[in-house]
Length: 126
Image (cartoon, rainbow, N blue to C red):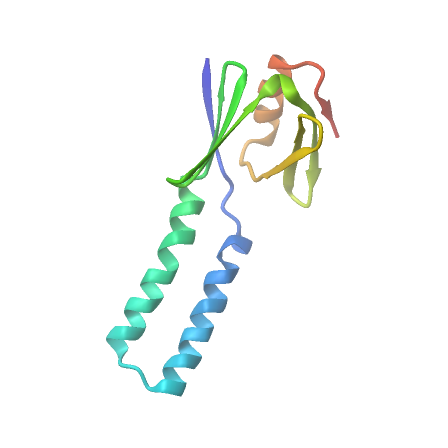
């Protein structure tokens, strides 16, 4: 059984991009760069956070939780090692193994928790 959950896109992920754009505008005014250079810089700085936000998803595949961040990072967690799930500031913190933690931002939190608990009934949900 393989089930896929989408990430919730949050404004906070784009905050660094907004700050960079404001710095670029200041730089443009300060150095009097051409419009084409400024546009290229803005577009290139917006691409990585956008790709990461739309490409982040979570897959439950039998007894493995796979977390995919964009193209580069995949994290695999054995669901049997998950100890607890806790909601913190509109996100979910998953505690697994002895001291490991990972924070997730999900659209369907309830379905995700139910699927994890169906695999490992020892998960403590707060």
